[in-house]
Image 1 (cartoon, rainbow, N blue to C red):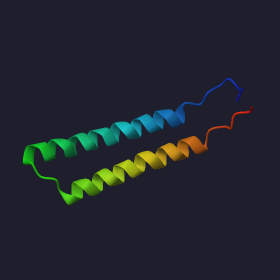
Image 2: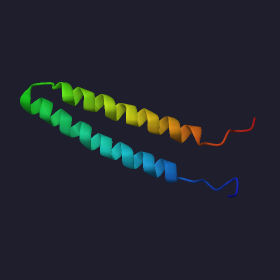
Image 3: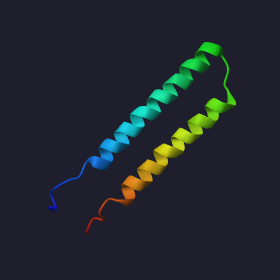
Image 4: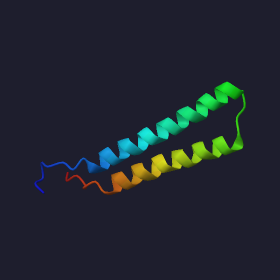
Length: 69
């Protein structure tokens, strides 16, 4: 791969994952607004989804080449 070629596959995967997470969070928010209740299972799901976001981001950053100074 040439130095100017950029592999966007990680970014596409990350955006896909964020889209899924966003949909799940939206469903949880709608349920909370409709019922007026916050369920422990929903809070745990949000925590799990946020961990997935951070883990994906860390993995993506770890695969990036280091910049020469």
